[in-house]
Image (cartoon, rainbow over all chains, first blue to last red; front, side):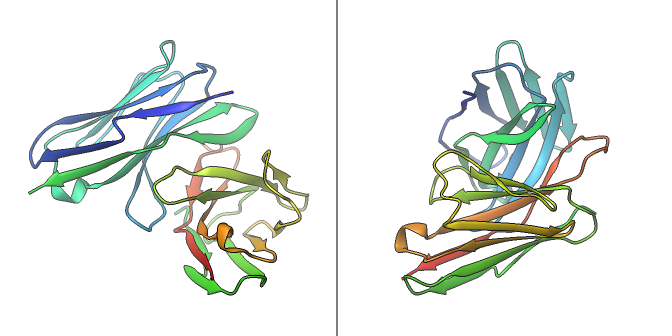
Length: 113
Length: 118
C-alpha cells in the first residue's frame, strides 16, 4: 500500500528565506507526483506536476524535484513571502491505469514578515 | 480553463437529514470525478471514484449506502450524505479529470464544501 509522508509537519521561517519541503513515498511505481497549495478552508491549487520520467519542474520561485528510485520529492521555495503561507500537499498517482491520488499529510508553512 | 465548481460552499444541517453536494466541471467534460473528505488538520482521503453513467467505486471503509454518488452527465456529479450525523461533519472536495490530454488524468479540484451537522 502506497504511503506518502511529508516532513516537517509545520514550518515557520522569516520572510526572504529559501526553504525546502520534503515528500517521501513508499512505492516507486508512480505515474506522476503533484504538489498542491491549500489555504485555510479552501480547495487545492495545483503548483507543479512532475511526470515519472522527469527529474524536476519549475514555476516562478518554485522548483520541485523527483527521485523516483529513492521515493523522494522536494519542493524548493525561493525568497519566501508572507503570501506563501499555506499548507503544501504532495500527492502521487499510482499507475497509468488508475487515477487515484494518494496524499501526504501536508506541511503547514508560515512566513513571518 | 479546467475549472471545477462545488455547491454549496458550506451547509449546516440537523442530525438525521440528508444533504446533497454538487460538483460541476465548467469548461470541460469530465470522464471521471472523485470525492474526497478532509477532517481538520488532516490530509485528503479519497472516498469514491465515479465514471459518467456507471456506479461509483468506493474506497474501503466508506459506506456506499450513506454516501450516495451520482454521475449522471459529463459535467455533473453529486454526493448525497444520507441521515447525516455530527461525525459526518467535514470538508468535502471533489475533483474531475479528462483522459487523452498532455497531462493524462490530471485532476482539477473544486473549492470544497464545508458540512456541519448539528
